[in-house]
Length: 117
Image (cartoon, rainbow, N blue to C red):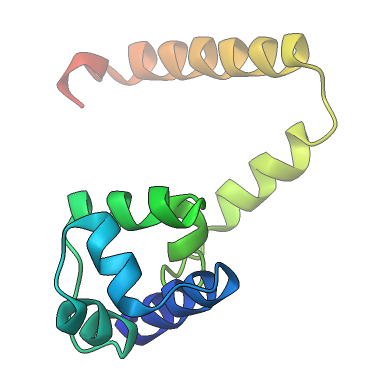
């Protein structure tokens, strides 16, 4: 994960609130020096601290990490998303059930035990 990107996002959100590093540090029970190191990308946050910072800044953890996590390039996931895009919840549920049923038949035909996965 790119610590600098995460730190920059935290800094941007803190500045939007017109807070100093000290004010944010007090709200999340961390040291001002630690907040500075986070914002410069020199230190990483524990999950608990990341959640606390996100909550105080009024943003989601997902938002803070959105530029830090690179999604796996997976053409099958992209294709699935395209296929179900703009479908109703009922149609999505039906498609999932059909795929499960199809894989069940494929597993049975190959002698594969699906409970082993």
